[in-house]
Length: 170
Picture 1: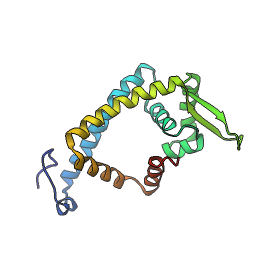
Picture 2: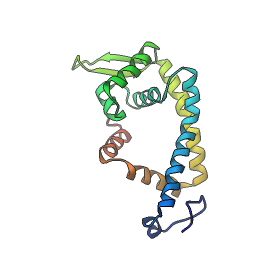
Picture 3: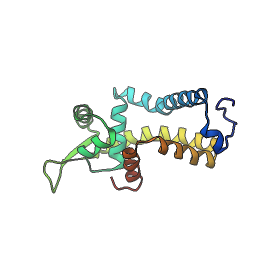
Picture 4: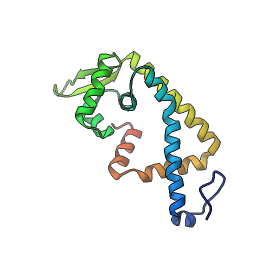
């Protein structure tokens, strides 16, 4: 069976029996695709001396304005110490605002400031442009298959969190 070429098609029976070499090629394609997907935002972040952790926090705060620190910890799967370091910087730089909860004063609800929204827009615009071009080139069936593969690779807890996010129930 040949490698995972761009023009090659597989039946469902073929996919069950992918060779280790074909799987290795898939792994490598994911690594290189991720590098491409993060390249444009990384350049923007580097100008501000931020990293991908800052990008992820900004992205998910934007997706769920008012999310709690506890919820963001669960989504990102990072330690409290790591997230606090990122949030302190984003707050001190005026990109994120932390508000005390109205029902539970121990909760901290996170919101992007106007500057935070502008940065999030620049970062997301770069990634949307890359995805839009790739999806356009690949076609609707490939896009549906790609999403199906990504969801199948998620652990069950992550799949549930992703479903909640998609449904706006964060």
